[in-house]
Length: 404
View 1 (cartoon, rainbow, N blue to C red):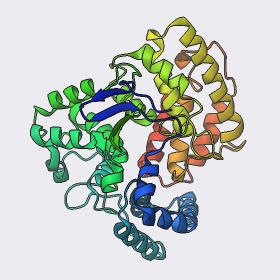
View 2 (cartoon, rainbow, N blue to C red):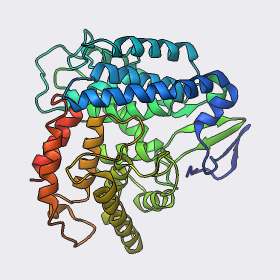
View 3 (cartoon, helix red, strand yellow):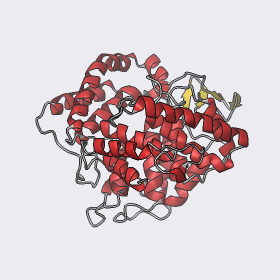
View 4 (cartoon, one colour):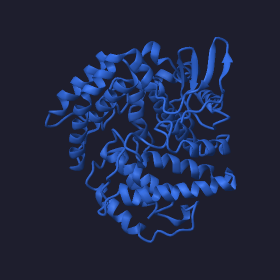
């Protein structure tokens, strides 16, 4: 569900209103730029086939980082832009490199210090780099990540963030929601946590970032979201992923928690990013976001909200244990476009967030999970088959080891 903090009021020549339930920004691009829609539909079988091929390679423990970055860029261009030429170019690169017996790797930093050698799109480079830079064993004596210079000034950072807030997809064919999500999730951590240590952040950026976040959160829905200008209307959305990232990386230190929880429960049957479900139904990725928001907001919930949250978490745990994980620990249910390492990470992260592995984390129930140690062992065994230097594999192992 998309929810607005400005319920149908006038704003000069604009009418500010909520996006209707079920509305998706891709509809605006499709109405105005039909060619990219046709290309997306025509290439989806091939993209799916390439993704399955990469799954098989990852299941053998091989590095697919470079190819995954091209695939991620391709999906972004097809789903969030109308640039048919750039999408076709990305598809050609992917088709060529996936056939190589030893494709290139993005496991090491490039000349600018990013871990995004598979793409030239700046925010995708940023997203590919942040987990490496936050890893405990990151080499902070190495080359400083000069690609961050682009926003390392208060004026440039402010302009960059503000330009991402509002999309005009029917005019320019660009939905900025994906970039808004990836960029804010990365920059909040890097700037506020002063990482990596070998990069000299402008000290004024922290104020810019905190001011931006305070103004961005919707006081009625409690959510963070994207805004769209469509046919003279300003449409506001309540975005699960954006809200999860801001709440988690600020350690729950955001406002309007009761409002946020009401919105979160209300959107349970909606389609991601404005709901809990993707095109196939539940995913551990979205369930993890939901569980973390319940955990962070638990102490500020009303009693009836806590009761409802506990019921929902019980349902999500049951689905995870019966439908998402095979008896031998293999992951069965995955989000669309999710890599094999990502599918293990988000499943493990969800179980960790709800306290399944460690009873001290069971904030929502007195139920015991005596089978958890055996489940942990099976998941650990499956992780050993995957690329061990993949950041998602490493973070999944760390979560299991902390809860052991």
